[in-house]
Every structure is written in C-alpha cells, then in structure tokens.
Length: 181
Image (cartoon, rainbow, N blue to C red; front, side):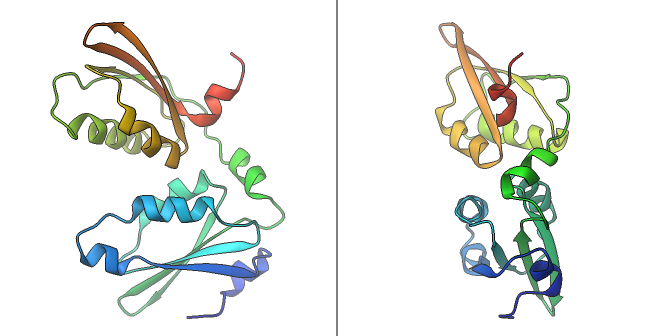
C-alpha cells in the first residue's frame, strides 16, 4: 500500500511516514517508544503509516494524546494504520480537544518492588485507569527512568523526597502541570 486512503487524504493529509514494526517484534523487541518518537516528529499534513501483524488497539488512545486519529485497514495478516490529524485542526487543537477530565488521584505504593516492576506497575495502572488518570505514587527512590516513558505517553511527574528511602510522586497528564490550580 503506497497510496494514502481516502479518509486520510480527506483530512488534508498529503504525506506519510512509513514505519513497519514487524522486524522489531520478530526480534522480541517492543516498538512502542519508536512509534511514539516517530509520531512526535510528524508535520501537520503528514500521517504515520504503521505496518504491524495485529490490530494495535491500545495505541489508538495513546495517539489521541498526540492529536492523531486512526484509520485502519486489514490486508491479509497485515494491519495498516494511519495516524493523522483530524480535518480542520492542527495537532495542537486536536490534542486540546482530546483532553479527558482529570480523574481523582489513585494511591499506588511500589516501595520494595524489584526493578523494573515499579515502572511497569505505574505504566500499567495508567493504562488501566484510562485518559485523565492521576496517581500518587509512593516509591523508595526517585524513578528517573520513568519520566521519559511518561512524557512519551502524554504524562508528566513531580517527585518530592519525603524521607530517606521514600519519595511521593504525582503522575498526571502533562497539561495538568501547566495549568493554574
């Protein structure tokens, strides 16, 4: 497939960036970070054309945080997904429209878990809670490796050292830290 599908061109998209993640998956890798980094580099009139061997359903919600809608086509065992800016909007406008109301914070204690379990537990809880999720995390150290993974998902965090061996971390959508109150 080299032509953009009609729903994608109808939105004003004129170009695509092709990303076939099957080789990464075949080697046992996780293409999630590669997909998100590629999405961050897209121009407004450019779609991310993802080629994969299964429907990447969880990715649809994540890409909304980048202001991107999805168009999916199945071609035998291949799945082609185009992530594009909705018609009449800039990616920034689409991201703002997709802001889910903030949910009440959920307490999460990951102290004592062995790496990478604290990081995985936090990321899995955000997926479980869905858009607008907020967490208050108790951790035995500052989770510096978590910050980039949160940023790629549209979240941010603020850590405060409570005492030796205990940190309290607020995790919320990135926009929540930029707004007053």
